[in-house]
Length: 451
Image 1 (cartoon, one colour):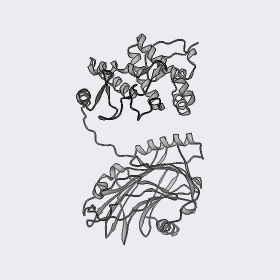
Image 2: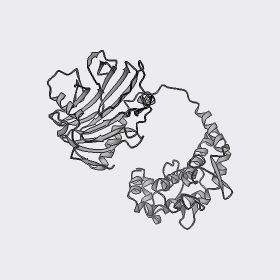
Image 3: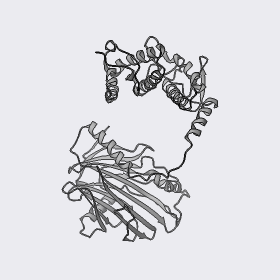
């Protein structure tokens, strides 16, 4: 995971200075609650409502729950079940309903949901970012740390950062962009690169409608402006691998705070039948080479590759086993697989021999190298013949030199903990005993350790 050091903060904005001024005041907070060892206050500044999260003696994070222009009033109302607090903000522009949910399971978590109902049809010209790391004196200018990951394009709206000075720990911020869809539709915007920022002004900056357009928020209609989920972890500074592990764990904790969709019946059997039918009949789905049918990686696009063929063949085979009779298309696609095999290399290539000049026929990354071997091993376990044994074992053995030259490949294979998977890393001469096993889940599951 690439890490960007942010020891030198950018010049302060007026929004940051307003927050710092508000934090220096001794006004009583609107409401207080906690999550594990974290103390949380909800405070109002001259233009915003903030949730101020502190770890005693270790600094904290201020999260903007709402940006409110003009004169406004706040009132604490009865919280709904599961909520820690609920606040209503009234202004000339409209009404804000802000709810706070704090949980402490394995990790401390905070969710802030902000809904806005405009008093008049309106356009919002600008919304500042919403996350500010702080030092023990509540000063955003005094905290130093690093951003390890943030949203790219239209991917998940998250930012993962660490406050080193003071030693507050890791913070994962996730903006539930799905909940904001009505806002994006009304403003004609998309949340591309919406979560990120420059230290110490991080988090989500909502996209706004372009000038001269008719897109606007409609009076009386409720819009979700923000659904922010924060996960906190107080750990000593760690190496990159441990940081990546914590990121995955914290992302799982954030996922648990998302609202589950309503349970709906889905006819998966019917969908599978239609998918097989369309795959077989749609002219955009397959193409012929060397007298055989191959599946397009994309609809009527790209050259057939071995990974796609094996993925589809394995799925068709599994579907045929489930329904009690084979799918004819499976046999058609299998018939052409041998064209991917390179006898000189004793393994399968990514592309067919007649791939266009715009592709490098010798190039393959670890995903396209090992993923098809997983499905090849699965098929071989179901139908263990001399042909499948030779194809599986020779192809797997031939990939080992690539694995030794690729750190990422070695790490990926080493993470497989089954004993049979470890044998993939051994020289070919040590794989003396080769026979099928009852359960195959990795390319090397057909290998047993030699004594």
